[in-house]
Image (cartoon, rainbow, N blue to C red; front, side):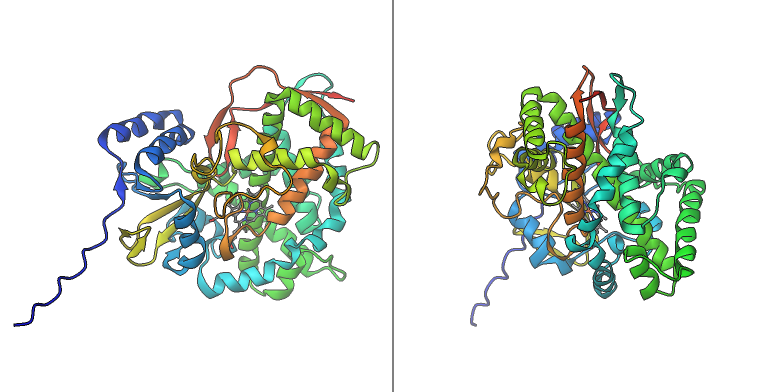
Length: 436
Ligand code: HEM
């Protein structure tokens, strides 16, 4: 009888958290989900680039190395779906581009990309620095201001001005708190284990705002060339337009809020570097407002922004679910497993970054290019951030204008990393501002 070959051995399962580290993870939870980041770094060091948390009701596989990240985002992306319908983000955003898959996702991306291209929004950069002046004009001289709140107001104003050609400021007192409630609802929390309760009143207020904009735009004889117009002209279904507007409003302002706040925090915590950045801003701009052209000469600000996105990526994980059984980095992951692509961990990966936890903006000298998929603050592949170009111009314009006009000092305070819908400095970020 000819001997039949033995079947190849089944691929191993993903390395799991041992009981000791599991205990650390559990102990970190009462400090909020931000407390889990140091635990994840520790587990990453112990178990490598692919590991599974095994907390009660929460068993995601973390992907923290450049090669498996490339697999999930690019080469093997069809094996990974976005989130199941029960997920709060999916429930809130309906058929928003962030939460759809396949052909529907590709169609929405094609429709929404033109308004996020640089030639489209760069001519609106004058609006951006003027909005900085408007918000900063209310800051009391020499007193501490909470930059987390101020950057959120600014990000909301700028987003709506550029994408909806709308001045949201008069509605801010009514919208601000519902926006925060909605962000709380979709941020990580105990809903992962127990399920989440949507805040219906907050959603109603946001819907009123968005449906109002849609109706007004449908009736406009000379609509401006912006995202809102592109959507109402291409889609008859108001609910589908609403889903895209809410997706962009949430994704497009919360991330920038976090990014601007963290960058101010890092500048405040490194006074000598701040002085150098500010001196360059004054040399280059003098009394001219920042423009897409002259901010290209602000090399030190550019380095600061890149290093801030490395240390504190506002979106620290990309959420996915396995569509079927998958082999990733040689390990078997069963169908329906939650997979978290950790942008935070790979951007602090000790094999690829020297002194990964340190703020070293000087590492971003001209010509420095990080290894592929080790620097992914805007994700990668066809699901990368649609607003990346806009967000990068916005951050540089806003910060250049602020540094041109104000001296910043950061009083002593305890700032922690809070893992909400985006990573935020909490409970606040107080900075003293003095007009120059
Ligand atoms: C500093 C600012 C920003 C950061 C760091 C950021 C980061 C990201 C990341 C990492 C992803 C991919 C998530 C994943 O892998 O699942 C993403 C997707 C997305 N971002 Fe951003 N983002 C920023 C600003 C913006 C802005 C300004 C907009 C809108 C104007 C925006 C809209 C979106 C949308 C709609 C998606 C989903 C794209 C898709 O699934 O096809 N983001 N963003």
